[in-house]
Length: 427
Image 1 (tube, helix red, strand yellow):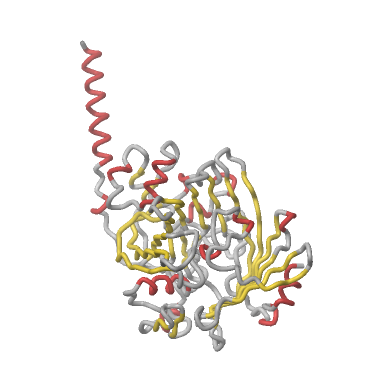
Image 2 (tube, rainbow, N blue to C red):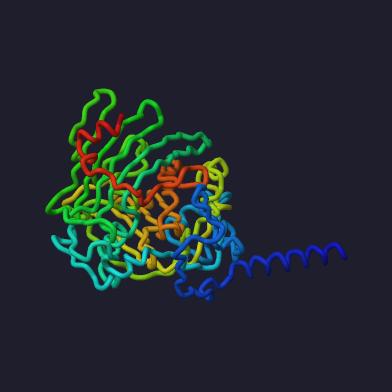
């Protein structure tokens, strides 16, 4: 009899515990006022690859997993996040922390930001105060896209980063690349060329792709001056024009998982989609991902998805934008939903859907404030492909990797960003 009572009590408390967990009221949590981190914190050492966590004392408020995600699916989770719980019920989870609105930009950017820029040529071009946040009061879908594209992200840039493709069996394809870039939309560089910037990249690993390189010159008006691109082939030792490096072109290094216009969230011409603003929504986003940045790479690469124990999610106000392929245009991604951070303008999440509105992939861009700049950017892009159950980790920034140099003291020579300069860079 005593044993039966114990079993009944155990069932009662177990059920009540699960109910209390399921009914956790996220909407009661406050989204605080912005508290931008505008200078390095005390623990920061510029000679190390580390960005110490300003919020290391924060504790997990709540964990969402396969047992309770359904209670938050409607109000707080995106379709891609719900699909991750359905596809990987045993391993996918989201640790939720206090919201910390830490993002900042250099004061020079803020000082230049007075009013909205102007969209021209059906949104393909922009006119505004160079170096500002182009649309501080956004009200159109493309305002958010342009804010993301032209957010502050350095001036004279040099760096290298690895990329990984992880298969369901745990096997890993490893690659690495190196890049130099000039950004023109910033307060520190004269911009009279009508350009966004110039970028040269090369694959340094694996050996069969080593020195496969590209040069891209991007204008502020894709309608008037389309993207110019060249590639260097190490086999032929020749440079050729590459007009196809745009839209849904898939670089060989991505193994078919991402397209050219998905680099850095979204880039390039916008004319193949109809763009719709879905307004501001409250969602759980990967944010202030310092713990992940400080974790050795070997600990974060697990089958199916990254090690979720190291990611931090926060309640974030995001501008949601939907891109639907025009009937007379072609793109392998017919429908895309993008989630842009209200504070930093970074795309933090993207979801892609097929012609029947079935979800194809979920993408995350966890951000931190690189407070030595200051600026908020992602520490990687993670693309989860539901058809193959592979995922790609790209543009990885980590304590294991030398820091990107965002503002070199000596500017890059503009003459480097030519076909002949590409050949020299590749070698």
